[in-house]
Amino acid sequence: MLDFKPITKELLIREGRSLRRSRIQICDYTPGCLYIWRHYYHMRCAEADGMFIFESGDGSGLYYNCPVGTGDFSAAVLEARDDAEKRGIPLRFSCIPSEYVDVIQSIIGRKAEIVSDRASADYLYPYEQFCGYNGKALHGQRNHVNRFKAEHPDFSFEMLTGENLPEAESFMRLNRDEFYKGSEISADELARIDEFLPCISELGISGGMLRAGGVVVGLTAGEIVGDTLHVHIEKALRDFSGAYQTLAMCFAESMKLPGVNFINRQDDTCDEGLRKSKLSYKPCALLDKFTLEF
Image (tube, rainbow, N blue to C red; front, side):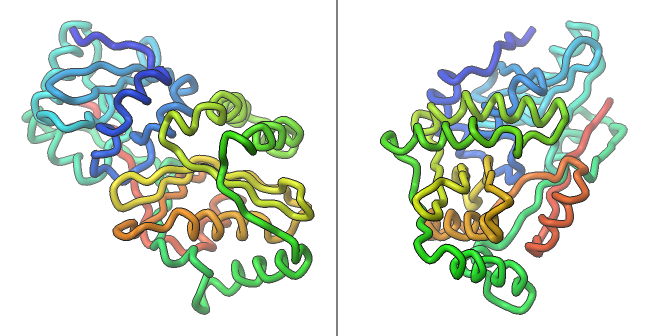
């Protein structure tokens, strides 16, 4: 059987480079996402055939996830199949990108029952859209930024460093009530961000802070995998109109590199307000994630 172990900071630091070689564009397999959500989704990891095989869930609700790495993909899928047989559990895969659905069915040799959930789809955007919000379609975001700049002409944006990290941690602690949405998933996210921030440098993740009048009013963090910037954290104070739009723009402009053409801003968790906001930025694609049950 596969030897599944907890996903630890040490594992992600050691294997971060291998994970970032993946061409998978959904956020779930990035080191930052794995670190933040590993507890909530009861995620564990095994290594086989030069690939990382993740499982999520608990008890009777166990799912294998898409193998990632530089090894033999087909062999890793078959390892998952054999592991399910030995454990006497259903062979189920979750968080499967669309381009791997037919591939996995072909490897297993039979059709699966396939389900997707709109709430879990990642929002993908052309990178350039966030560098100034140019064009008629994004005039709303541009207006928010202009208002923020007019009301706070001394605003600044800075990348996270060892020196200003304590301010980022303090910002999250002091504003926890504003960011808490009254749900279990929100509580878990905030708890994991507290763990995440002190080790983002070790994990190879970048972050930034937005200030107004010298005070921190926004915090963000993300990482580049392939041609995509994945935004893992984005928190700003609602009392500062335009802070969210300005924070997103400044971070994109600061992280811009040749060959990085997209921004993945993750899913909306079926939150109608969040869905409306994400749609207003005009995504170029929604990246569906599929569950396969054989």
